[in-house]
Length: 361
Image (cartoon, rainbow, N blue to C red; front, side):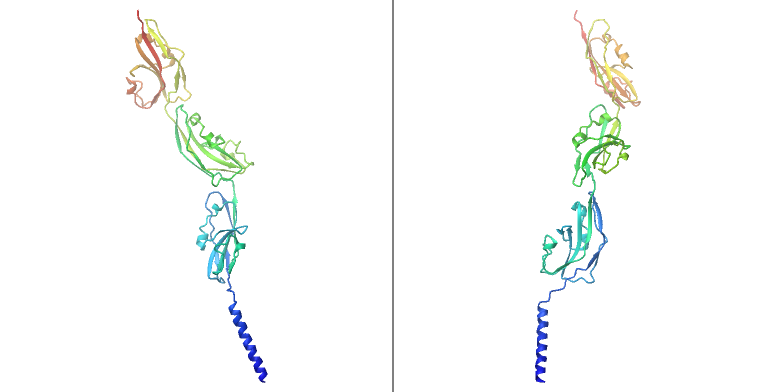
């Protein structure tokens, strides 16, 4: 009987020691719980991409510390947002093309999860939840251009754009070009580089509105041959556009010929060979104007033929200037006594000089 009592005491003692040892070596149980939401798929196109609707079932979560973890598909840790709100504030477009995974973690102080560079390097007491996949697709993207808008007068003078910049941070595509269209979407030109765009003389396009675009595209696109923007097919992307307005203004064009020099000798002196380049001339009405060197208007021949019939010998000694003019109905050019007195909408061309020399007898 005593022997049984002793054995029983030993058994109780052993059990007590065993339990005590188990308590001393007990590793805390860490459980991250379960997350749901997604998967998510975004296009890397320069537009912000945020995840939403992620939920955490923390009913079984255990652990002193917590964080969210974002990794790439190789397990490299890209970020550790502290809260779900911070996760939903991450712009996944900034990460470029690829695949991310979102995890939730619980851990104890002995874990290096806040400093480890990869999931495989995490040590200590921790647990990661299931993951949510975020796919970031690379699509053809033209990026963004800035500069302008531009406004020019169609007046025969060269008009070039300048100061245009391209933000190609998110631009992607095997091929690139610049595209110039009218306001109906008709493609007027495809300058290959920005330098070529800045070399385009928009004055030559005449009156109207142009738009400048930057494009990225793949080999399956017909953007290099399409006649209009609507006809472009295949894989391509157009940037935002920059407007170029080409205003029609009253313009007299250019005249050439002379200068002329005559002797005032009683013999008729007529000019000849004067030509008018009216390529960029614009205005409802037209006339020729002859002035002296002080700007006094001596005559207004209606046509070039009438100019060539003027006898400059009759004007006596002095200097004349021949001009061509375009004007609108609000101008007083047909009545003004001097050039300085002309008002309203009008334009004078360059002038041709006519010298009338005194003859020494």
